[in-house]
Image (cartoon, rainbow, N blue to C red; front, side, top):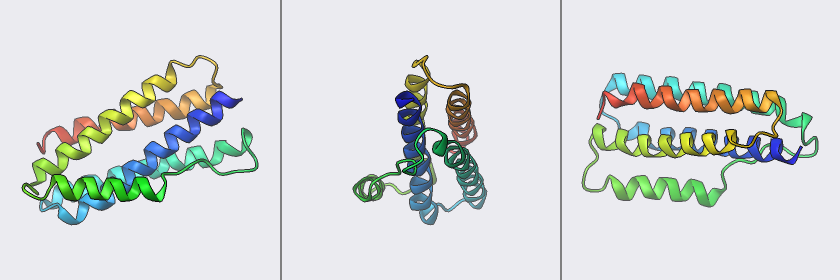
Length: 143
């Protein structure tokens, strides 16, 4: 049971980080097609988030899935601001998103290595990883 809660919490934090990063980056993006792609990806993150919200009460009825802390949100925003101070090109912005996406894939794969999770949690984890991999492929062309 604890493995399921931990997995859902970690995946939910990844979803929140993805949405937060996209929200921080979109105002800097110049290419309208890239903005559309990022908006689409944000919606897909929210679908995975809804899957987590639906499943979470089965494992922990007293709480909601963990989200990113205010400190994490501030650090994400600050990191984006610092890394784009000299270069705020769309290519640089995509590079930053891809770095976070790769971290999400790695974390998702680590979670999947835990064989004690319920099938529903495995399905959600796979959905998160698939979304991350698709985002990675879709964004490569903007580097």
